[in-house]
Image: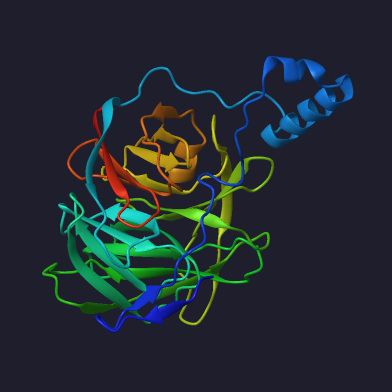
Length: 339
């Protein structure tokens, strides 16, 4: 986790420079000429084939849908993140009370806070989350508040690269009433939880927009397959909930690690993304998110982003936005029509 030092101008903690990270995980691309390939020994070729096979997992890649997919145009760059502390965007969701706003937060190393920006990237608010800790916030989702109605944001403190934590947390925060640029603080309801089968590393938090059911998708569970877990019920005060294993999901192509997702505001589909691809999973009204993820997905357009993690549907249609990490990272929008 990186350290932050106080900013004299704002009183808000700012990050120290981060070391570069490889987009999409640890891999490299190498060009090899045909003569060089010819000089390789049979033994080396066999070893390389076995290594590639082991990295990709056994069996053919998962299939993709060829029909029933949203009809999308090309990716468009519509803005950039504002200058300042928002330099490692990890989670992203569109507003409900403010449908023209995007809520987003940094990856690990920041404090318990989030930002509101316009669709063009203009900063509209910075909000501290009282009563919350920030070990490794990885995603944010929006759904109905658990009590009193209204629209709430759910922040997932679910990152665990070393798989050594014994407890994680969701933080439920009422969506801000106003986004007028003034600093503000909102108090969170804490939902501590653990996995039923040991520690895990996750970057995808999904909340059903109608039922409010919470689902977590692990980054990778085993051999390229991610676990899908659900919160069965809110724990009593002071207690820790145990998630329930509800299935698994595998990226059909590209990078195997899921880094973010969002449920359509009408509950008609789920977006999951990796650093290289975006997938759409159709969902019927009687399905849970886990059941939808068990189906065959569509391959959707996505920009080539540095360490791409954030994705969100936009209200009122089928458009979605994606953002990668980095200072003043571009905001990409994909305009789609219903399947």
